[in-house]
Image 1 (cartoon, one colour):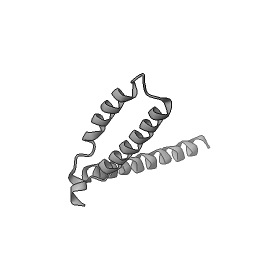
Image 2 (cartoon, rainbow, N blue to C red):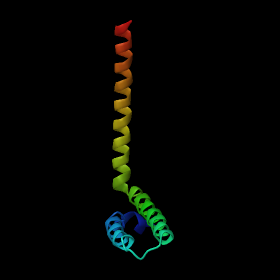
Image 3 (cartoon, rainbow, N blue to C red):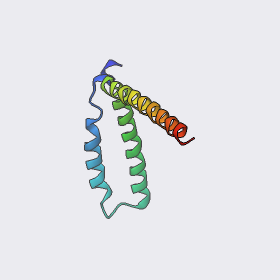
Image 4 (tube, rainbow, N blue to C red):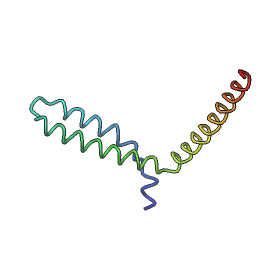
Length: 88
């Protein structure tokens, strides 16, 4: 299971998009086949994104963004409270 956290999952996203993009613009593809390919590609990209998010670097980045969001939200609420008090 450890190799899942060290594998560069996000590096595969661009390769998949390039390959599927070239395939999907072929004229001889039926609508059903194109929709099936888009659905499969979407599911695979979602999997890769979830795996990338599970890496320690992304967990730390998410934690920092979340803390920043909480602090900004607190400041905005405080400012709104002060503005309401000034208007009364």
